[in-house]
Amino acid sequence: MAKDFQEKDTLGDCSVAAYCSSDTPNAGAVNRKATSGIAGIVETSITLAASVTDRIVYEYEVEPDEADWPAGAWVIRADVTSGNKDIDITDIFICRVNALCVNQGLVGSLTGLTELASAIVHIFTVSGSAQAAAIESDNAIAIIVCANNAMSSRTIGITPSQLITAPFGIEARGLHCGRFRDDIPLEGPLKGKFQIA
Image 1: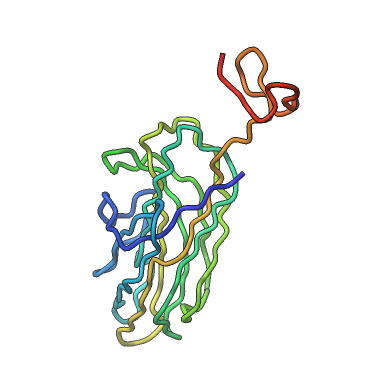
Image 2: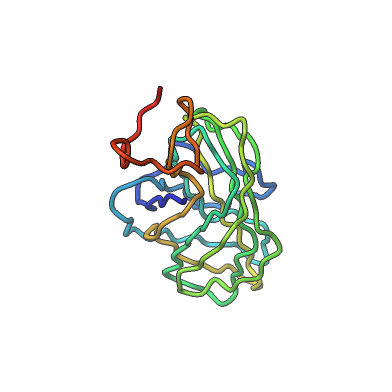
């Protein structure tokens, strides 16, 4: 199963930082929450200096409220509402952080991209690893990294209006000695119901 998180205008609790990446936050970069609720509508403009690379321009703070972080696909959607032909999206990182915004490790990444930052919704599917040490208060930070290929500064704008999809959720089909079992469908009076022994 998968769970969707709504990108919002609300600022994240964590500051923009490299976390599990090795990149540099760009001036004006922001961290927006991805939880539940209404989609964001506020565009943030980020100006990249001439010929810079490896610059963090945007981050999404995903709040799963889950202790079980399984392996699976993370789908990051970035709504570039003001594009620029001289700017490339080069890397995507997903990091796990604790409640104090301290990096706990890399969940997954896409690196070496050369996706033109045109004014469309960019969709990136990242293969995420299981996080056995995760606890319920941990959050994920999705990081968008860009490069400016021009000899002068260039600006793009990003709006937090899309969904981020992550591999959270359990499909409970049956119970065995108080534990969930995927291979035992519930029948009879228990069908459609479950309780933990």
